[in-house]
Amino acid sequence: MATWDDVREFALALPGATERVSRGSAHWKVRGKGFVWERPLRRADLEAIGIDAQAGPVLGAATGDEAVKLALAAEDPSVFFTTPHFDGYAAVLVHLDLISRRRLSEVVAEAWAARAPAQLMREHLERFPD
Image 1: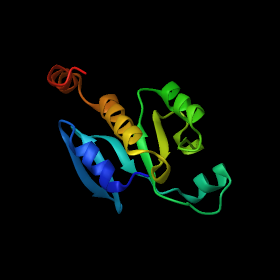
Image 2: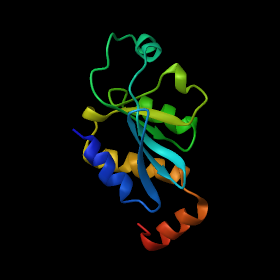
Image 3: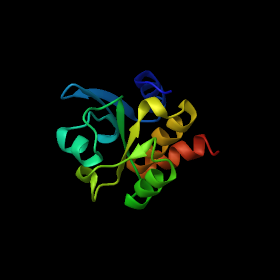
Image 4: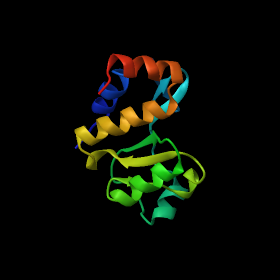
């Protein structure tokens, strides 16, 4: 089970990452572009996925494109999902309390890579080639 502290740890370990609170929710950005964020489900989201209330914390995470989002949701629908609000948008929702710390670290790093400027990405890959 992962926590917001885990998200914070993984996100802020990445080059250029910053944290801020917007509308009461935590957001992590790289050079002004959000890559992971706290995403409370809205009434329309709950209705779309057929539940009455949000059961646990939900993380929004940028993806490289919609195909990646859909692949993640198909791979493990108990952890990854989407709602109509995110149709046409390259981001996936994550049940934070159902994802392992290891998998979360991968999701955060991939989200960062999807939003980081190319030069920052190159510098990071040169420093950490594996």
